[in-house]
Amino acid sequence: MSRWSHKGVAPHGGVLVNRLVQADPREYAHLPALELCERGYADLELIATGVYSPLEGFLGEADYRSVVEHMRLANGLPWSLPITLSVPADEARQYRGAVRLTRGGETVGLLEVAEQYRPDRREEALEVYRTADPAHPGVAALLAQGEVNLAGRVSLLRLSRGEFPEHHYTPLETRRIFHERGWGTVVAFQTRNPIHRAHEYLHKVALEHVDGLFLNPLVGATKSDDVPARVRMEAYGVLLERYYPRERVLLGVYPAAMRYAGPREAVLHAISRKNYGCTHFIVGRDHAGVGSYYGTYDAQEIFGAFRPEEIGIQILKFEHTFYCRTCGSIVSPRTCPHDAAHHLVLSGTRVRELLRSGAPLPPEFTRPEVAEVLRAAYEAGPVRSA
Image (cartoon, rainbow, N blue to C red; front, side, top):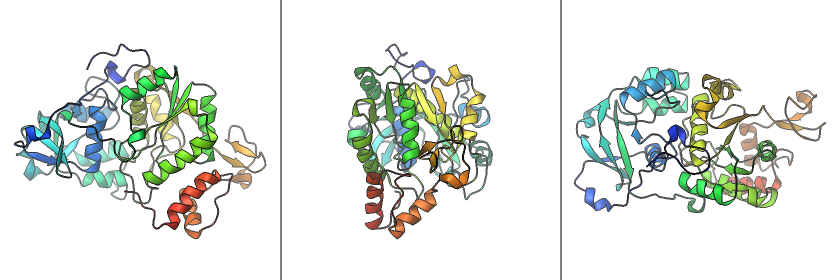
């Protein structure tokens, strides 16, 4: 791990972390084992591969409290979400020094426990999620965690490419691809939903101004009613095959779990894409939101809390886009003079209702090929996120 000296955008904090090690897991069989949940394993990978640079491990107490209260690490570097590892209080005493991290009983990584501390879950919920309502999925996950946080540097013994190995890249790999393709400017797009025509509009407007598009869908743990990653990835594939210039788009998965932290999560998503090597990041309406916990454009406004050079990636802010029947195209409030009676806007709930009933999705809303992928998935049985 060293200061960034390659061409392209510098990683957050100037260092691209690499905590991947080549080692035989059997060497660590004598160490106490800590089983990771899906989100914990995702965080381990994202730290170890540099997506969460400059983090080298789970946050210690000083960094944790600074992030919760000020959206900065203790050294002042912007960081919006606490990346922590928790255990029940009655188990914490067994985790001292070196600990092996397991997933499904298999040793996948190591943690050098440097610190243990008790977080304030209520304060964390109110500051990070802006609510302590246990109906909020992020708050519910937070309240279900153990009472003690373990902090320290981590190592990943083997990189699992997951369910989509051909699209699973590390920041070192995406940076190399961008360089090989001659992309001096790259815009990233975050999504946990199938792409519809309004998303496509954002991509193509952005592509008029940059060299390449990094379509980077989140494929980690999501709510049970979100469309599963396998269905979304199939939909992205047919869309890119027929409607996008191949030489200007890279589809790569973002293996993070959703926290549904709205504005705060938007900042982490931007920093992550900066670490992948992107120069621009699209933030639309209600980014990473859930329910009515956040304002429509809170995820855009939060970037005003930082100087642009502190974030180090250009934020492209788009208003709500939709199809206007009178304009005959995808538009936004900035470009359309007509009122809501002229607009076709479908909520996620309404889309799911149409799919369950077998009714067609309007072509103005989504491409027919994408609609067919979604319809086939619904006809095959209940569509639930993992």
